[in-house]
Length: 123
Image (cartoon, rainbow, N blue to C red; front, side, top):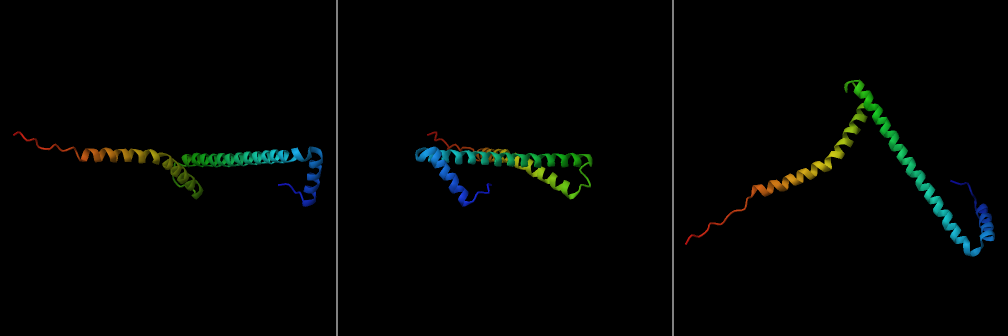
């Protein structure tokens, strides 16, 4: 990130030690490193979000092209985008389907075996 050599770090350390003193220098170093870490994490988050938005915009543009072509005779790039959108839609719906299926299975097993009544003695 920065093109700082060993001797430049030594000069910065000596100046920091003279200006801040030995008591406040470790606190200042921790504060500056925390600031750089926060800036780096924020920049990475913005970069990731921007890449996702650009990908979504590209998929949206491809979907519009596919709709204009009537979903037939699509180029391989458009077909790949459509497949990605279908997979994304399926992955969103799957958790709900699996819960419904589990619930249906539980209801199904409960109704398959009704409680049996033991014959009562009338004696």
